[in-house]
Length: 254
Image 1 (cartoon, helix red, strand yellow):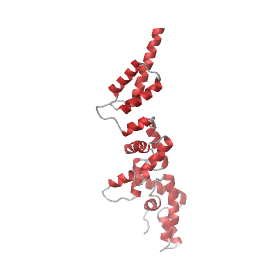
Image 2 (spheres, rainbow, N blue to C red):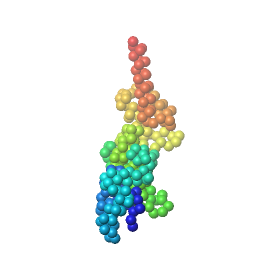
Image 3 (cartoon, rainbow, N blue to C red):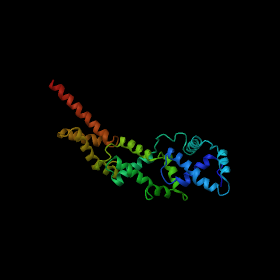
Image 4 (spheres, one colour):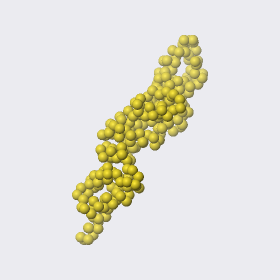
């Protein structure tokens, strides 16, 4: 069946040749040219000749190979995902999945986390299985990858950027105690021993040898602020306490 528009032809290309993996805009542009002059041309030539094939491309406004073909792919992207397809605008679901990857695979570093997030997003028993279970009817993998695109993941580079953005919020993500805290978050109204232990470890980097008074101050910070501050913010609060204490001591000596 002949395509009625260039956008329809791009959609066929995506469905048939590249709908089973993450695909960037530039990769789709290359794949589209290969598809049109490969599989689509072969289908066309079953009933028509080569001259009619090029006339058909003219009707689809695919006259200039590079320029017109790239324009068709860009227009398809806009139709599918809006004009901001090149922006890294990630959905909260993805940040939750990065945390899940850290817990599930116990990723030791950034490179491993990128690999593990990719695995979670693309393996049949990973996030795709949950996505399928939430569908009212059977959906194919191309539909799943379109869903990822709408969330903000369109290529491997997007996953790398996603991980980097997430690590800005959780710079201690590769610490074993932090990963244990991810797996067992604090319960409402009750302190979490793992969280307190992590706080003490991080505070020890600020003040390696704490006095009894300083340890008590750290515990008070935790019990008073554990519901409103992150571990990192509590460490910063403790650091300000130490700095203020040192300034006070210096003024007394002077």
